[in-house]
Length: 476
Image (cartoon, rainbow, N blue to C red):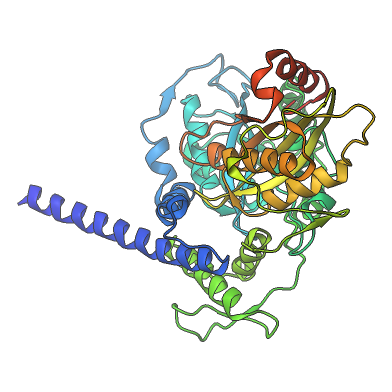
């Protein structure tokens, strides 16, 4: 009887999971259609399922309880005396630093990166297993969040769960810079050679309880000193409201108004300036929020569907040609092979650290980085303007992509447009690599494509790669 009941409950759970996944898949297909894409083309056939799995993984904190993590992970430690902090001796501060987390911004549904530092003063002759501090923080990171709310929830959960003398939580958070629809990503790139977190919006937030909250200067000072040893500078009087207001680039934008009297299948009423396609996309994102267990009518989420669609529209598929200072970009001839290897091209020119943003077509998550382009041209000829190469990179970056295809398209277009032998190196950080699945924080991907002399002359290839190694500061 008991075994049968267990199987039945498990079957119901799996059925519910299957239904939720299907709901998200259907919504993603609407988003792809709104972007002008065909969800049945080979590269996108599994995208709805991948996105559904990624979102479920990224919001699994809604299905987790802190008590399940903490229970059984409190260990006796007598300490040196019976005063506060007895588990590690008087004032026995415990700090775990540099916990790498990812969360989803509740204002725009894009992932943001978190480096979490947690400190607590044990009491009651009990200490918590160190790994549990990370797991508790991750429970709340895996929900739709803003930084301050995340810090407050982690602090409160630890204080209530392990009953310490006090808890302090400091978060360093980074959010993707988001250009407005129709505005060039190049306007927001600052031509930065370092395409890591340096070009993201960042903020510090903190939350504290117990002896930390009571302005105990010694305890707080000890905590900050231990963070400084890792290069983290925090001011206790840091203004939280200012950080919150400037956090998400979308937070200050006007958004469509949600009608609370509508059914759960139709969440929003959009302005007359929003076309039918975008209206359907906004409703699809609202449906995704509902499927994840959130309330799309919660005030913090009212603008989220519109914001996420606004981000996606930067990557809307179009068949427009672009003209670059008199050069018309035509579709490269795939059969041309090595381009113009026979020309007298004896000078190598390189343009390094051209920034780009794109959108992974497998998970609908951003990837970004820099492009390095090297080419041979005839001695005395004018080199290609950097702005033209930037436009080519931007043209192919602003669509649903994979890095391998992006690299190939750039090298083919530069070769066929200007009749030169080309080598392209693309270095990128993929949010899908570091915010879901294997969660390889600080990982990056490099791809190479070559045409002409670069494919047959190892010395030419080595010269260009050496120039990249010497000048670029990618990922530092």
